[in-house]
Amino acid sequence: MKLSFEEIKRKLLLGENVNLECKEAESTIPKSVYESYSAFANTSGGDIVLGVKENKKEVNPEKRFIIQGISNPTKQIEDFWNTLNGNKVNANILIDDDVYTVSADGVVLIIIHVPRASYNLKPVYIGENPYKGTFKRNNEGDYHATEHEVRAMIRDQNPNGNDSAILEHYNMDDIDITTLSSYRQMFKVTNPEHVWNSYDDKEFLRMLGGYAKDRMTGVEGLTVAGLLMFGKGLPIREKFDNILMDYRDESGLSGDMRWSDRLTYDGTWENNLFNFFTIVARKLTSDLKKPFRLENETRIDDTAVHKAVREGFVNLIIHSDYMMDAGVLKVIKKEDGFEFTNPGILKLPKEEIYLGGNSKARNPKMQTMLRMVGFGDNAGSGFPAILKAWSNNGWVTPELVENTVLNQVCLSLTFEKTAVKNGDKKTAIKNGDKKTATKSEVHIKNIIEFLSTVGEASTAEIAEKIGLKPSRTREILSTLDDVEAIGSNKDRKYILKSK
Image 1: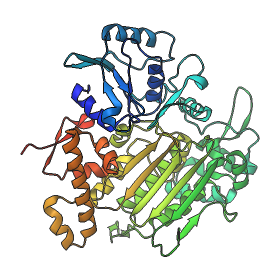
Image 2: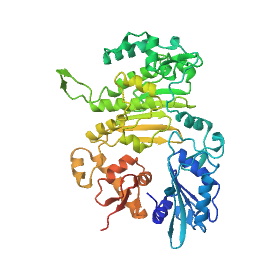
Image 3: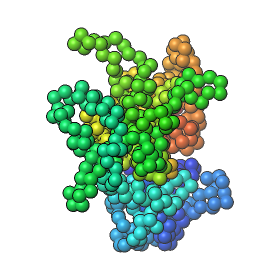
């Protein structure tokens, strides 16, 4: 959806951010436009507005950003396209409709909408050297991507993922037999008639993708997936000293307690991924409600919520970037839910992940290993299953938060009930949910005041202003009688209803 002149004015009241950049460009295209183009493409997309002067000495956005317009929009647009299609940048990811003009009272602005580049096209960079010409974006503006960030983008181009590489000099001696035996027992229970059950450990691992041989060079050994999933702790730490695993139970705390239970490397367990998953998964689901249910005269203790929590954990493992310079696989159990944080940004846009049907795991071998014993799914249905389980319980929509500066993703699953409607406040208090009702009142007041000031705003803009996550903000907006939505899906805006 193209921005209107009025929408741009309203956005300027909020100032520049990770998705908005303004440039003066009165008569020529500034060179920094291509830095912003690269930055938006490599981060989360955004809009470059040409024809706006910035007075950096001013703090007030109304005075800081001055709309002055473009004197020769046709020539500038032509120059931009010629440069973009030349050798200035390595890839043109725009279509014709992404560059357009808006005008009001004789003032013309040029808008360049830059979408987020597909993972197989990153990095988008200036010149011929990606390590010198790649930019990313944060709330402060464009910045040169670090070497580690560029390497991560290049790794993600691999259609086969990151976990099938052979680790030279790592062999079956580096496998923790106890861990592998536990996995094989689980595999046998899940797949009792499978032919792999008769194979020795090395051949079994080979079939799973945990051991491989390069036919061209003759080099063979454990793969990244094989070592990380089933390896002994010491060789894992030798090869991947950049990656840590950390579980904390932050529920039921009192006094100065920071956690009531923790699992990290302490020398008492072989810190491979399969051990981490099986130990922590039990801790996460141990006190979830298990309503009595029989299936073929057998009690079933597993629920959709149990499966959703494990799915969140599986996602952490299969989407982590284990090649980063530093990262923590962090799992936190809270009083009101769970948090799963993994190193590495999203390979797919959040909209696609929420819809499901498409899976682009960074570690497809690990995904297969877990799926073969009943954990996770590689058909892209895992995240929708999490959403459904939470929705069926009336809880706030799970939130997937991508931090492109820290290069990590956090999935939050909370047991908080969805927003309380204005008319349901008395009912909420009567049911003992007075705290939720009061908090909602404050958020509602802030939303009304914000919309009164800016006229209309997107969910993301409102969320940023009132300090809530977009999913929580969306829940509250859906309950407000004084607010109406205009537009549809990702182009939706909210305004106050006329009285």
